Length: 404
Image 1 (tube, helix red, strand yellow):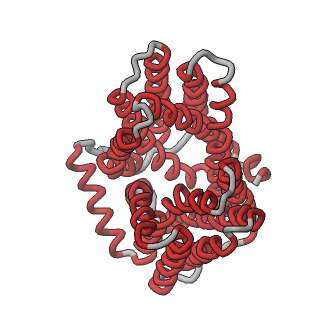
Image 2: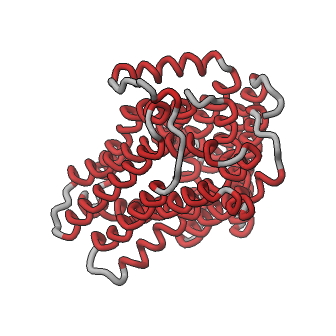
Image 3: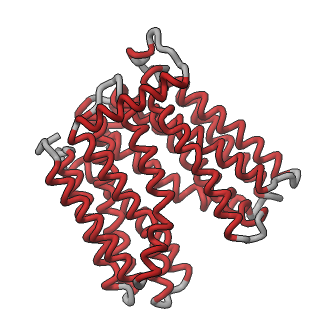
């Protein structure tokens, strides 16, 4: 991966900025969580309502992010998204420092950050093929996944450490704002071609949503792309609640300490980083069928995890393996979408996947909770793993091409 980054310097610059913004996201998420609990007085219903509002922009703006990425300069979209996130974060700083944060303000800030992420992500993912050679595309996606996982681990820890040395959480967010500012500067120095569809493009909302719906119909006619996007989104619906709710609940059920739950989640992230570093070097097949096989392996590993729930070492090792298996999905999925897309619809395809995947992730907790009502945590976790494997099996059978 390092030789690739040395050869692809524009991408390395963009990735460095993305790593910083991911660290900023982690800091922001840490501050957001403790602020939500504070302003709601630890009342979980109100806290859940704030998180529900934070999800709404995915539904409203998800279709727009990809259409804009295919019509406008992706470089400008990323730059202004980072600049806007810096401004929103600065406003959050002021509210926390002055004690003016209320549930309504926190909900609005959460919605704004989600909206800007919805615009940034399709532009970033669509820009990668313009910055690297074709043979480096899987490694570039692997490096992007590593940056996301490192940011997710470092950001909250950095925020927690900084909070011990500053007067309030608002001061911690100054660090967050700085990461977005540096990321915006990294975007600014990278040169990207303007999408061909940008010439003479109209930006009326009706035409943008029309683009999205037309592309949705086109995806429906392309079986491999349909399987990649829709079946992967179904798997994410299943797995989200398993990772956030059922695995911690299983460990607590077997009497493991809270700290062990934290270690388990960290090992999943560590496995993902390790798998992302290795996946591009051990496989050259990024077809839809191979992607579904990776999902199948992930489902089987998840289904087996409860078998060792009472053994702490085995559970922690299983979490590491789960993260490792998930990394192959995380690298193959964007690579597959990039290979199956053209310049005129790549942003819209990523936007469609992001909208469906984020919707699934938002609903995953409710799905996991409903399963626990009719079965034990262990059975629910194994059932989810088997459902993922089943979805992957059907997707593998429906896929057309053997190799990507």
